[in-house]
Image 1 (tube, rainbow, N blue to C red):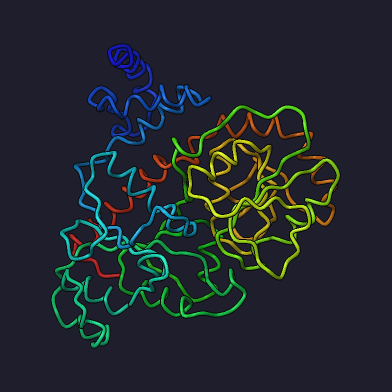
Image 2 (tube, rainbow, N blue to C red; image 1 turned 90 degrees about the vertical axis):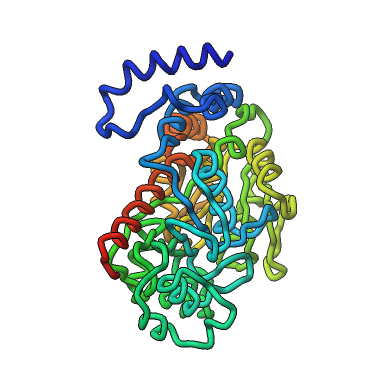
Length: 398
């Protein structure tokens, strides 16, 4: 089987390489066999061979391997979209051959800081980011000194990339410490990554306007969130998820949908006490593999959250081939695009439209599935890492 894969990819290289605009975007022949098997795995899971090939292409490194610190204590337990994304990104980068760790005091070419926290429930201290930037170290006593103190020293720290979250006040509906921490952290970083266009514009409204930035949508893991066999018969089964029980996550819409005839609503996560679930089937909190299994047993996904910058749950659902019934708020439309149906005041009509179009939408999603997968995001992150490294090497100060 390995020999067959190698011969197929050799042939694909001959025909595809001349069509590609960037000379570094395909080096299939020297790829390791575990990576090449992705195409076969993709077919086994109901995907397309070329999706696997595209993933292999994305996985080839832009330059030499990097030492990357993702300064975030990821956990395998369910803990929100940021944790899920960074855990998957780290795994993808390691698969490509890069060295990835989560301790800022270890040697690194680039350090990724996430929004306003350094782990689940662990707020980031901007003074420590300033220390890391200038000295390459983070020490327990550093917060005793103001951030400006560290700028007295010549810079010795690695390039720092800031993955910016949405404005917490806009998402949660009330102001928290996160609204002060994130802009303060951003002042000590070299390049910023916004998760969506909405993320960038809403942050600008809140005064976060980094000089050097890019926009990279979130992505998910191909071998966890993959399509299943489409359901036939029975009521239209919809799926919703939320780690946060904040009412702005769209729970009332899920409850209202569950009261419609011939509609079944499943939910995974934490449901708020103040909202009647009506007919919603609450599956509780599940790790990613179990969540993906539940998604594959549904016909479509529902996301009615307000002002979310780039919902990981939308991307995970699209990875499973599910059309999305979405509220046009935040970055929801940007992510969903032509792969779903917008929620209006007439839920019954929305559901009828979804029921009529779901098969066509699913086919469209499967045709574009590579854009929701981690190899695409990892390639864009690596380009940004190199940009930050080049800026620091050139002596630029942002």
